Length: 177
Ligand code: NI
Image (cartoon, rainbow, N blue to C red):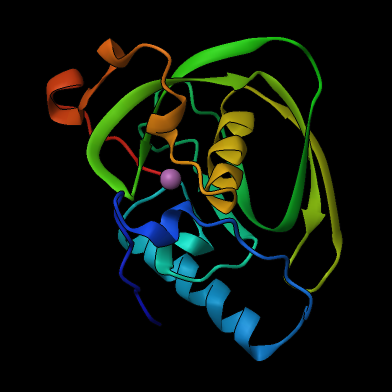
């Protein structure tokens, strides 16, 4: 078990595009995923991307349990998604609040595609192909943005809707991604 340091906004490694994984099933990839999982759990995050722990590979993980206190969350099963490809399934964009482990203590309203198909591979190289909507689609878009060097504040349209979590949502324990 290894909890890794999560890089914070301002670190140039968060702005670099990540490289595709070519060696599925390697011990290094397995260890990376264990470390990402341990780190996400330790910080009570909803998702984590490899660049957030300083590894420039196209690996993201996410999970949202229905009993956690993300408003309107629903249940997102624990997923390891490697070399993802995203395809919006409608023109509909939805605004919603997001946080990020690399931008601790803050939240902002971000537009995302409401309906999304995502494809990629799990840790063993088995293909993943899911069509999702709502919060599940939001989490995936947030995590995959990390692989492109994009942090959610870069997508906020109206910066009046960007602020400190404890001021915006007093008394609520919210997850970060
Ligand atoms: Ni994030």
